[in-house]
Image (cartoon, rainbow over all chains, first blue to last red; front, side, top):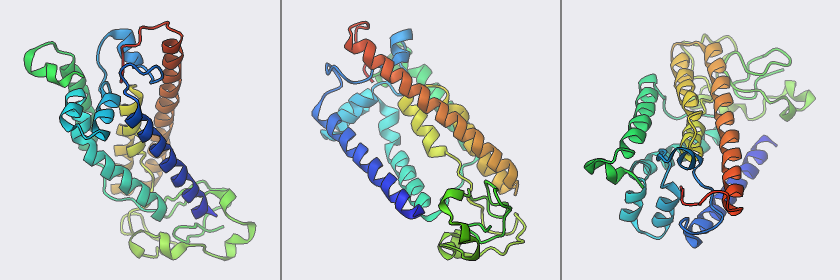
Length: 133
Length: 145
């Protein structure tokens, strides 16, 4: 019963992922009328850490790695780690187990990384403009 | 009743197993389920069957969800700073587990869940509002993700 319910959730999640992937492949976020807009960017004019993510994924599913890197370098570089974590989380969910320990210094480092990245990509100075989408 | 994960006897109506920290979904367990231990050999960490009176320090690492992956995904995808407390509480779950503070870990797990859920719901609302504003032409629509 419990296992079946997890399987259903996993199938639903996989279906959503495939639909999302297809939409991202088929339609460019730039100029398509239905993608969500970044509220943070709309309100402040600044880039959030996720800005460029949709365009980066669109480029990635078309095999344009460098273009993706240009839109959101941190996201693209950390993608293998994030995917590994998601897979381990799902496997652990099915097997009622946890893989790996998340230490406090890692949390602090992660939050610091996101904050520093957000600040740097908004600086209009030469090396940092490459971090902006 | 009994914990479906480690087989320990737990109080009726408990939400978490005091021995291994697993969440107890009561609706999953049939009323007569107390006499059987469904799935228990498969669900203990490292294949180790925890005896009911295990001390927290020596046994296998209890399974307390830390919502780390969920909070990171929410922070990235929803563009909202509310995912960050989730990340910190996720680390708290693990550091409390390491010192054997299972009660504290469960408390942090609940907080991590709360913040992650908050950031997900707020992110969802913000994105829906932005789609509506964009499609009605209220905003220019050049703030692509």
